[in-house]
Length: 238
Image (cartoon, rainbow, N blue to C red; front, side, top):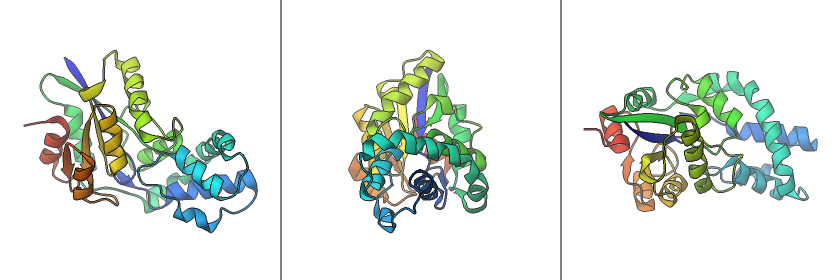
């Protein structure tokens, strides 16, 4: 039986954490440097980027000397504080339309194809874990088969990382079109295309369906509320 790896972006594709992602930067910066994060950091773009790239921009903008050398420690502090955000995420976060049904349907796969689902996210691992667990979305996801925002500043670098993790766990080759990446930004689409994977855009974030199509997505959805349509886009399901 052939296997397919489906990698989901987290923020604005599966969920909205309603500001929890930025909050973890404020907490980590305060602990590490003993002062508040400068207001100008709010202008640092986050959509589609990895936490490693975002942290570099924030620390550099805050005037931190040798910012790149500080990133590993900064992200370790973020990871340590992430579980404390669970209550906030449960209270303020939300699962985006159609997501639970789409995850369940994709998990069932299609005849002759086993589907492995994981995430490809700019979040540090513990932040992704707490967001998904707090909102009840871990059942169909093997989070050890994915890739996270500690591993590179460049999102496209994460696709081969996830493919290697999945290959090690399942003994299958997930290169090229054996991987499907589902995300809400042009950077998600670019990451898939660079790796020769299938790119599915979902216009539930800050980019329109037209933006995602222009970026080169193989299929574009307004959201995941139509399960049959989502299956066709992701798996080519009849």
